[in-house]
Length: 514
Image 1 (cartoon, one colour):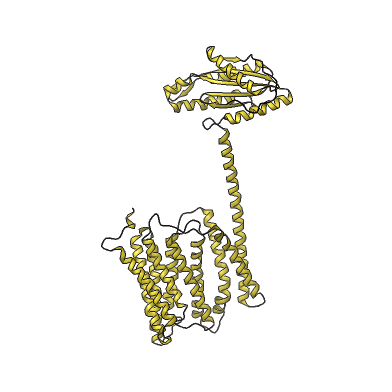
Image 2 (image 1 turned 135 degrees about the horizontal axis):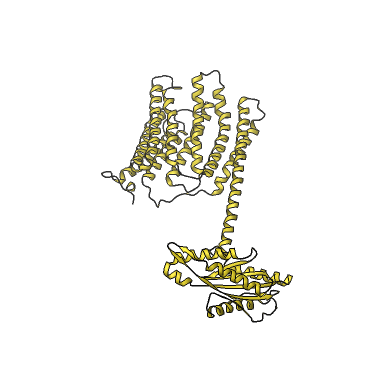
């Protein structure tokens, strides 16, 4: 088991578990106080319970950074972001207690810095190798979702914040920065959910934390724009639970093993997100079209952007389907070739040879042509194989196959039936003499010495020839060629023998001998 999965020396495993339990306990206490605590004390006690959650979650990130060397920097940056959020809360509370300006203030600097810290940490934690095509598709899917959210954010937050001349420029910029940075976190959330593969528990909890954080940020901005938010509002519990989710994510990652179960999102969920985003953007655009305002015009622009990105995604999917179809056809072609060809020599095997013999016989019967069949058995191959080894024997068979192809006509078929046995179909010959002449030419090509390493190999061939006018009975043609080949063997080898048995001119049989 890898060392990183073992408890640290001197630090029992239950310490991290205790922090995790305390984290959840403070989350429950914080939510309970927001719901049932006294209103005049909600802010103070709410912060008193919220800050430990930040601290415990940051401590859990530090624990994961120590335990998971490959993810050390990622967890460190997430912990930095949690610490920045806690610092912002403290600064805000101090400024508020002293009656000083709380927005924009140094607290906003801390709050805003947590976003790039988290984005960098997430990029380090979730990066994984992938094909460029998958990366482009994922990027488009994320941009589609973020652009749809941008349409809503522009209409609800960005346009009112940026186009409000009564507010100072600094306040407008800071107000706009929050929803824009939330869109960055939304992009990472979509990247976690949409990327192919299985989600480990760490990523599931990270997604929960990101989803809660973006949701409560948008809820806060919506309530604040309507002057409906107040410190200690029940939605504050979502910030706490988001931090709890981040801390628990670090805890489960520190305890992860190679057999940790993973969550697989249905492919249908991943496929529907771009179209759902498009539908939301189009719906918002239709709802705001009657308004002749910069906010409504921005929604139209964002909707056009979403539409363009969806079109690009469809084009990419079409190209990917074409690539997969071509690859599938090539795979089928390779399988068909493998099923009908000898893997060593590339010659047709017995199955393809039988098919071509039947086709040649049908053509001979239809056009009244002659058909000849050669059975070739190598002489001396076993001696070469025993003396030089099987690799040399295989090389010899490959060269013999090439010589046979070169010695035959373009329309002839040469096949390897197995071992050192070959067969040739001569679909259109003038008579037995031409068939014997072709067999002799093939034998002379085979007899050419071949240099194998430092040795010279010599083999010859015994060939049986059968001949039929008009196709005839293939079973008999097959049998007579085989018997003629053995007759050539018994006659001294390295020769051709023509079968003299009469071949009946009958219908084609249903199957050839094997």
